[in-house]
Image (cartoon, rainbow, N blue to C red; front, side, top):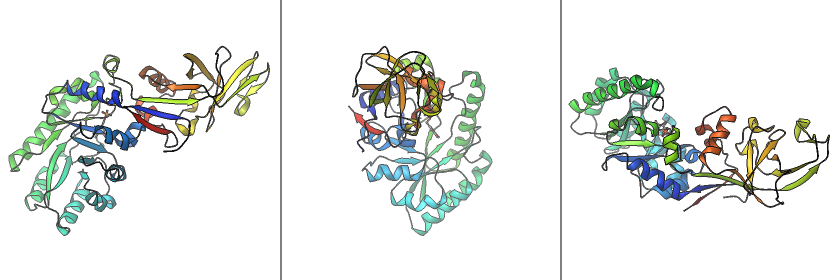
Length: 366
Ligand SMILES: *Cc1c(COP(=O)(O)O)cnc(C)c1O
């Protein structure tokens, strides 16, 4: 916590609403894994996890240090580490995190560690590549995996999973269904030769929306919890969780011909009233939002960003807005504003949210 006046308020009620929205799309027995990687998609992974821990079955983070932060905050829920590395495996065990083992190099390293410790039935997760071609074993690796597993009771396969490459894109429906079928085939091979049944999961947010039949035992919801369904209709059913607010630090009256900001990018064609706001590209606002492309809201009116976005500040045009120094500034507080920023920044909302930097104060309410 810092006392930077630029604050990202995380709406707890919206998180709960979004979680319940996905729950009602699923069978009551389907488990929910909440993805809280990358600081809870640019919010605060620890605060989000503490808030959700009684309402979900699992958490996932990308890297082990993100999981350690959750454990240090007292989170007891199982935590899947999606992208561990061999040097992290000791910490993973110390903090009772559950590694995704995606190739023989890390699988063998973990089995060795588990044998030496020795661990008993330590939960591991096996990821299979079904077409994303990012992380994961190939189906041809199954016999070798099975023979290693037969020789040990130091680990236990808690789940087998895969990840869809284009779950949000209905033009790629054939590809996605093929991935799901490949996954089902892989799982069958395991079930034939293991004397227990690991959990299965393949769906992310837009997978739940478009392929809910493939929910298996658990789904992994990330962006949906934070208010985006990858589709206008779905997003309209969700509530916004990320509200970025600041205040007006200073107001200037600029005369005709005077300029504002670096490189004199804005030159006043008439007398102009400007407000300086303590949020800049180091807080996660793209420089693409400068020069009248992006705006903030002050007293319910649009104030366009003029000139270049600075590292720590923006200047906005408030000529027509009745406001004073210290007044509240909304950088975004709904999905439409976030989508607009993503579009102007030539990216997707995932990047706009995760770009919100660690300098911004984060506060969960609700
Ligand atoms: C990030 C991630 C998710 C969450 O995806 P969303 O589209 O945000 O729901 C699920 N699974 C894996 C493997 C991921 O890396």
